[in-house]
Image (cartoon, rainbow, N blue to C red; front, side, top):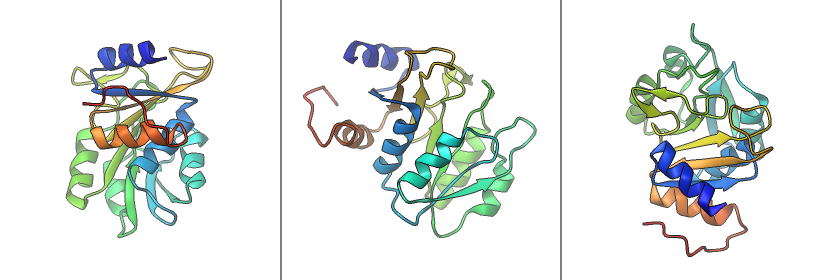
Length: 184
């Protein structure tokens, strides 16, 4: 598993990759690492797989759904309209190997100080401007479910360049155990 994580770090060009039991588990863990709490609003898109909404609900947050644009991805215009004081995170879901307008989403979120979790479970290997999807935000999640482009039968991966997010995910996903894996 550690070799697989290292291979994913190298391939996807991220500082840290953490193997988890599923993409859904990865989303839940990543939401916790972003400090999303009960009652916080998390915005995601209407064209999606139910696991994204399940993960938001499982941690006690409130999913807010925005319409998609012609690419079947999150509409930045619709996103802007749905942000409230309770909005703490946005989950764009890159669908069908077509990237979200991630730079526009990042501008909106940066201005409002909202975290971004890229759900890259449906677009493994997809790129935007020669960079793998999942690398444009605070944290990304990949799925290796049996129906995905690359499969391990089940499983997922959290990818991040943020040391604190990685440390939290690394401990949270395994009942608080600290690992000696280099996290520098």
